[in-house]
Amino acid sequence: MSVHPPHRAATEKSGVCLPADLVIGYGHALAAVAEDISLSRGTHYLLARNGRGKTTLLRTLAGLIRPVHGCCSVAGHCQFISDELSFDRELSSKLLLGSLLPRDRRREAFEFAEELELDLKKAFGKLSTGNRKKVGLLLAEFSIIPNSANVVLFDEPFTGLDAPAREAFQRRWHAADDNTVRIVSCHPDFDGMKMQSAVLITDERISYGGNGVRSWADFKTQLN
Image (cartoon, rainbow, N blue to C red):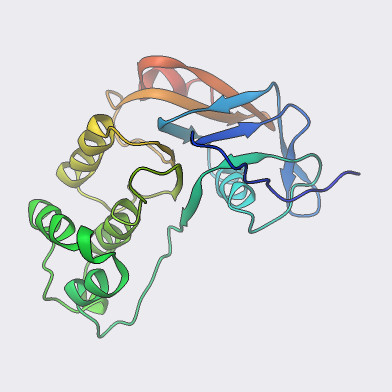
């Protein structure tokens, strides 16, 4: 059995490589890559039913757990955004963002927070689930290092998030002219949700669903 942590290649281009010998799991195999998958800059959606390995794959890419077999490559500054991200309940969102974000990104982050209708003055512990998700998404988005390779791994970021906020982030990602790979695991809430690129986990196999605009309705029947 060959076990290696992810290798973060020194390169100017961001990217994620999942070779065909990669097997993920917690001590035992949960899913294996069916064929070599290379993900370049842009947004890629990770789709699977519950318990099939979405979080396990993201944690493997982030280097938090080791593969059962093989290795994977992540090129760029890597962030893993857990679906259970939490902070001190008494701190306000503005204080959290102001303390954790680079000084030159704070103003833009606050402006985007207003667009998302996030109350920056309210204590984190008093925010709804969806608004807490907004704080985590803002921290991830504005922690991206400009003019550098970045990889951001989002674990179920849309759960509990209202549709206007989700669409605002999707518009931002679509318009982004940065060197960033975003991998977003999710359960789309309506058949018409559009995805430019998707990775699927089904029948214990990790495969690339192709690029080109497709909808959730195109993919959901493939998931077992």
